[in-house]
Image (tube, rainbow, N blue to C red; front, side, top):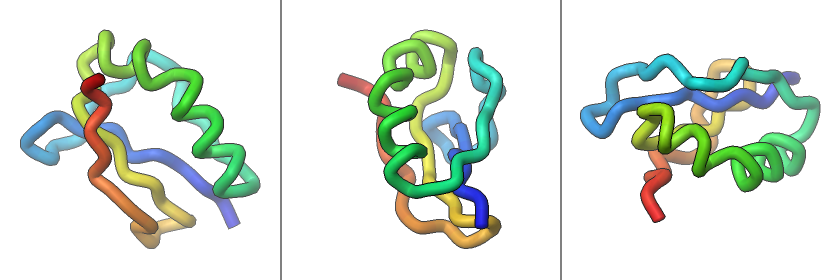
Length: 66
């Protein structure tokens, strides 16, 4: 089981993240990472993210604007 983030523009289309996307072994690790990097992602053109467990969307989209 892998946890990943989908990076999106405000209209829901996929965005190229300014950071190398990672796979996480737990939901908590994925959420900690987004908590540490959301500003850099937002500054790099990512408007929102969705959390995926393998291919199943767990939640999102979640806006990255402060």
